[in-house]
Length: 433
Image 1 (cartoon, one colour):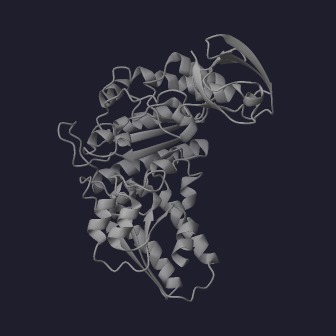
Image 2: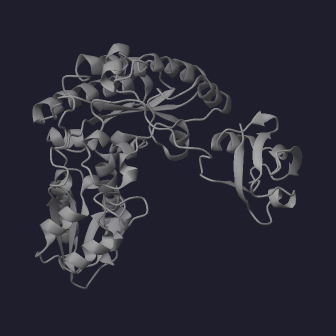
Image 3: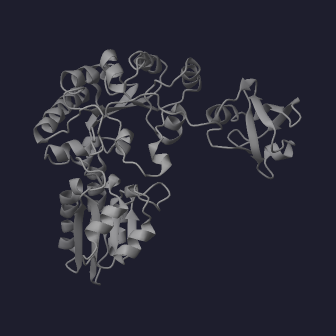
C-alpha cells in the first residue's frame, strides 16, 4: 500500500529531508501507512524512519528527527488519504433515503467511516469495519468511538439495517470494552420496532458494558413526506413518546444509582413530543451527546440565564426576529420573554418555521430551508435583523439544505440574517449588539 504525496510544506522536516511532491509514502517506522490515522499515529515519534517510493519507482529510506508532536510536513490528496467509506446498510429509518431529488450531491452520500468517528465524532454502524481496522483501533487506542447501535438484538438489527452482517458486528462491542476503548452509543428509536421490550434489552446490554459505554442517546425516528416505497414507519405521538421517555428515565435512574451516572439520555425532541418540560442542566451531566440533540435546549437556557444575570444595562430600542423550527418555537419564546422582562426597550419576535420542504413530522431547526424562510417571512416586519440557528447552514455557514444561500435569503427579506450557534452567551450578545 502506498499514499501519494501531493505536496511538501516549505521549510518542514520533510522538505529539509529532501522528500518531493509526487513521491509515495509506504511506511513509517516499519508500519504500513494506509490512511490518515496511521500517519497521525506513527509520526508522533521523535525519530521517524520513512520508507519512500520516488517518482521513478525506487524505494529509499529517509530519517527525520523532530519534536514529539511536530508534523513531518507531508500533504495528501484528501485528509483521509483515500476515499471516504460509504455505508453498506439500507436502514429502514435512513434519513438520506427520505430526501427529495435535486439537492446538492454531497447530501446523498452515506458515510460509515471509523476514521471520521475519531476525527469528527461521526457515528458508525460497525458493519464496515475490517479485522485490520478493529485491531488498529485497539492497538492505537482510538477512543472514544461513536457507534449507531439501534438494538442489541442481532436478528432485529439485521432486519432494521437490511444487512445480514449487522448482528454479528455487535460482537466487537465487548472487545472494544475489554480493550478500554470508550464508546458513545446512538439509538434511533422507531415505534413498534425497537422500542418497548427491545429498548429495554438494548439498554440492559449496553449498561452492562459500563464504564466503556459512557453515554447512550435515544432519538426518535424522523420521517419526511418522501417515503414512497420505503418501510412503513410511524412517528411518535404524545402518548408513545411519553411511554418511551418514561422507560429511558427508569433506566437512567437505575444506572445513576448503580454507577453514579445516568448513561442514557433522551433527545430534546422526545421531551417536546411528550409535552414534558426540558430538564435542568445538571441532569445532563457532561453534555456528552449534544450532537444528537441531547441537552441542547437545557444548555442554551442555562447559559442564557447566566449571561442575562451579568448583562450590562442597554438603553437603546431594539427590535428583531428569531426564526427556528416549530418544535422549539414555544421554548425559544419563553427564553426571549426573560430578556424582554429584563429590558423593556427590547422587542423580540420568535417565529416557528413550518417545514414545507421536508414535510412529514420534521420540525427541528437544523432542517429548516432557505426557501421556507423566504416564503413564510416575506412581508413581515422583522425589525433590524433576523437571527437563525447556525445549524440551518452547512459547515461553511453559507448554504441551506435546499441550496439557497444566506445572501439570497437576505436579499429576498431585505434584512441582515445572522446565524448564531447554540450558545446563550453568543445569542444574548447578538441581541444586544
